[in-house]
Amino acid sequence: MGILVPTLISGLTIGVMYGLFACGTAVLYKATGLINFALGGLATVATFVAWSLIAGQGWPVWAGVITALPIAAAIGAFCYVAVIWPRDGAERTNLLMRTLGLFLLIQAVTQLFWGEGQPFTFPSLVPTQGLRIGAVHIPGNLLAALGLAVITAAGFWLLFTRTRVGLLMRAVADSPDVAGLLGVRTKIIAGVAWALSTVVAYGVGLLTAPTLLLSTHMLDSFMLFAFTAVVCGGLDSFAGGLLGGVLIGLLSTAMAVFAAPEWSVVSVFALLLATLLLRPAGMFGRLSSERL
Image (cartoon, rainbow, N blue to C red; front, side):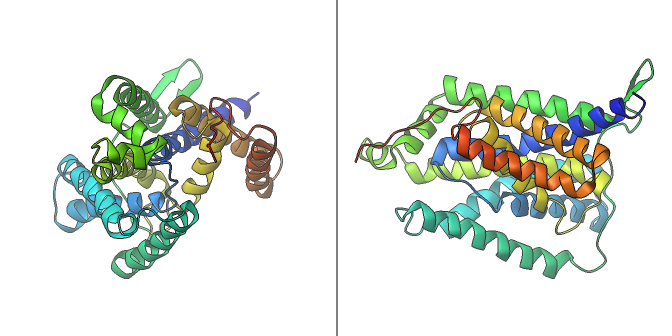
């Protein structure tokens, strides 16, 4: 019992982070029908921009973090324009491979500019003492992650169900050709989706860097685990992505503590394969059909 509660709290903390990353993946898929495997790299670049302003230029912490927010959105939109926009009518496999190529390019660029001397310390944005309820200590980063998760999920739900932009995103994802014929500026909508997903992933980077230390490979594993989370929860479901992230976090942490660290990764990807075999749409996703 003594090790169970800390394990649950640790798993919940990392799971909410995975869930937030999965939300960033889900918003892009819901708006464009595409998975961006470079999302972790984009978030890492944005986090490094904030760190450069704070540590390199001497800016106050929150000034650097807030200034890097629109920069993160601009980075996401620029990568869409540079990598996906040209010949965006290509096959999905081609577009997916472009995101993988973008990830490799971002890895090389971040290593070139910030590789020397890493990892770096990053100031914590939340009180480190957290909250104590009886004998249970809830860390501050968990509270911050939970708050950000609720705000993100609620915000995206409102965006896609109550706003014109969200409805246009859904139309573009369902049928970009038809949406274009109806006058929807599909490229602008897709660029907005890339910007939004990068901003969400940047938030995860800000919460992760103080504990894991800032490095060029800080979020590499997050993309793989978040992909598993969004597949398990449902590619078109924000709530499913969050719950899938929590499930992945609890499972990987429990296996690392009660079995062996090696079983942590094995169990996660075994769950991914089982989901694809038994329930391809995920817990809350919906199967889609295409007319041939």
